[in-house]
Length: 278
Image 1 (cartoon, one colour):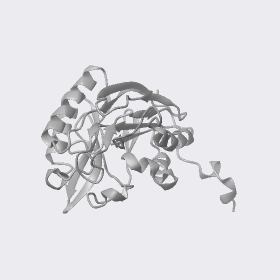
Image 2 (spheres, one colour):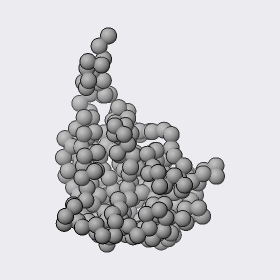
Image 3 (tube, rainbow, N blue to C red):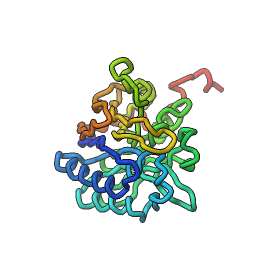
Image 4 (tube, rainbow, N blue to C red):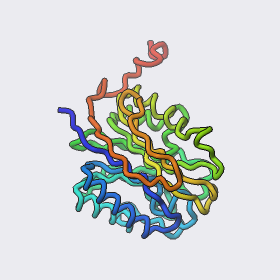
């Protein structure tokens, strides 16, 4: 039997530096997602503070145990919902751009720290050093964060594929310059070109979920997060894309049918076989 579930991609507005307000907003969206039939919900990257916002120094907290994680765990339990979210984590005097996947029972299934962080954010966030997948009754999940998806050689998403992920969830914060012209340069090409080869190669789904709203501080101050959240199927086809815009807050719902992988694990002889001969 191939499980089918409804995925909620929560393209929420993030108010820079407003941790409590953003948490409350996220929990409202989680309730609405469950009300509309979602089983799995994904929130954006660093949604508590906004990406690279200086308030991370004061607002970052522990995973698990911190205020943000506890609020999301409670929501997951109350709503009987899988919750994936991008958080700002404090651990051993370091701050990480992190993400979690929480089960409907409140169990922490995956705790990921962003690996391929943009260089301009290295003064804010320490880098992660490992990947995880999690088996659930719905299938095997993988987790990455934003620029992890275009690491050199698409190495991070491909590693998750090699680890057997049937779907990769990716909290994101997709931003453009203040003068970006969507009509002339439609946003999303980078992500389609990064996601599609991996989705096809491994027969898996990929969901990238971005926030909307301004970046008011940090290295990208003045840019705008514009949504355009993206879902690709196992053929590498775009099946859903969120609206574009600084105010394009949206709840995007899509049915996901988890199908068996073409092979249980990646077969290295299926690509570049000449390099595998003995």
